[in-house]
Picture (spheres, rainbow, N blue to C red):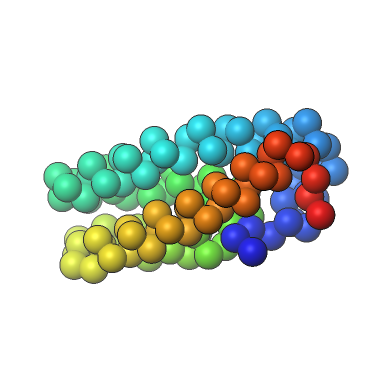
Length: 115
């Protein structure tokens, strides 16, 4: 599972409306953050990369998406170290994790059912 359903439900205190709103905000913001990450990598702008990964990290933490969060932290670590070798591969893994997460959250957001 790309996110911890029980933890996410606890975060919204079983409120289906709040859950859908939170998911909608995340799904709306996620492509922007990924675009910022790709752009920063292409420009080799380590500050922009760090900023974008930190913002995505915060969002993933709220959504309880550990696998994607772990991956974005790897990318952030590369940026902080000033070493983007391997960043393309980590970015590809992150994109896959985010796509998997978006599919799962999209279904959850439409139904409002956590289980």
